[in-house]
View (cartoon, rainbow, N blue to C red):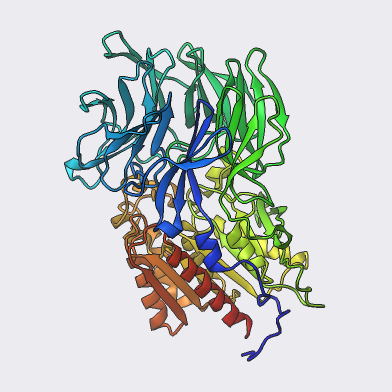
Length: 632
């Protein structure tokens, strides 16, 4: 083992990106609204033990916390949160994660009061009727004490606090939304084994003068597909993103059927892992402001509904997570290769010229140390196009070593129905500024490349994703960009499953980092939440009951004797998605095989670490582990 190292050795450069700063000086954003010129968003703060706060930005740019310290705004109706608050006409409604109660804040008087009675359940995805008498939303009904609690669409009487169940019986509901005139309600619903991006149903119903729901009708499509974000226009017309033609394009509902507005080989939607996300909104009565993903890059545009004309807006943003508009203002969660995710704002007349309302990352990190991603498109071993973002090592205070190539970290995203985005990620810069190259692969199964690309992984989870990540490394080796003998794998959740599957089949990696990863597919089906209870069947190609052998053979735990790579593990003991026993079992198997590993279990953490001290410990221990094996 190399006993000493030079400060200019790849992987050991001095960096301004410190773990404690990344944890304490960064926040994450959820849910976005604009009302009467004031912008509202949710903010998760690691330095407050992950407490979620609603923040407002006034027209003068001043920021204010709208929820005091006794509240943490959040909900877990479908397992991953989102849709925890709603703002309209100076009334703020939010779900408090501490007690499950929905509260209302009068934004004029600042008074906060409850609008629901104590109940064993959670609420999300709110919509207010035009008379402001009722709040429509989703509810997860935990009072039944069933393993998979019912999901319901309910209506809350804001005067009496009584909650009326409008719809139940389907496994899942989302996007309950009242039309501007208060006369119609729309929603999405789906059933196991589908995930919401596989196939769902769009419904519309009338609300009569006595507030009774009637004339319920399903909107029929000519082909299989999934809807995303049904949205009412100011003229009470319904628009939705639908992927029946492979991509999530924009449709208008006409005579109870889908009428395409714009056909483009881009996705105008995202997978509904969380509630309350939006990729389009009305800028004016006949103008849709849209965001769309083209080969992994998010862009912005306008659709003119009078003639279905389209123009792209060049605002130099490459990642957009949410969007809202009101009168003359546009707001988004967005970023690019130099800008970590931020709340940005632009005027209706100059949508290409945005200003920053709030950054997710503190300004103390100088941009001169930022490594910019390079878009990569390469061929898989079976000839399919696959996409990735490559970040070269970069630090102006250090020179690249002559005649040497850098080590590479391959980060495998979770989901697996998700994607990696093109934006400044401080955790990536933590490594590139120390002399690591960094690769994020949008392997087949990722989103933002159309339905057919997404479904390439069906039946092939743990196979095609593994092949694509290895083929991406081969591509970089052939381009003479990285040291083939110093490749590190990192992945979390389902990315951890891909990582472990790769290590079973390949012993050429120097080490790996697995965060709340899946090792045993059979055990996973025994400890799973409702939302993903049947997700595995599409990904693996059968059920554990009908094809237990397939699940056994595809599980890394049953081939752990073939893993020769040192691994560091991180897991939260309160993880509701991937049980902590997954990490404990694979670690025990490695111990039996005398493979070096380290295990760190974090008390009180769930699926995604929120506490600052947890984030710091993971980054510092992971870096130390990687550097240990670079010295060999």
